[in-house]
View: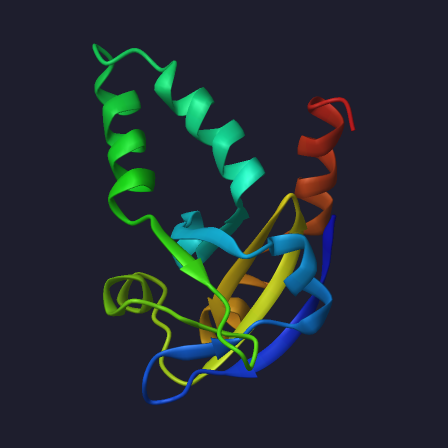
Length: 143
């Protein structure tokens, strides 16, 4: 399980150091793709396979389903760690997540998310998040 929040920098070649705590669970190869909320999602291969199978079952006749599948698959790329524990994030994915220099890597259970420091700060702002509202919505979901 991926948990925690780690601040890192992206070098001029688009490489990001993956926190050592996450490296073993990611495995030799993993998938990085466009995420929701202007971040990137990082999936170990086994978790990607689960998501891939669910997406394949969506009806092609449904416009929203097609758009969602395109969104995830078009941005997906297989990555591996270099000898220093870094990944190279392709420019199209860096653009999607507004990644320039400062990045935040967070664990979200079955995946990692990579955020630009500014996007993460904005997302967590008091104006954006109401923890009381979130708590009510979680209760509605049975949590």
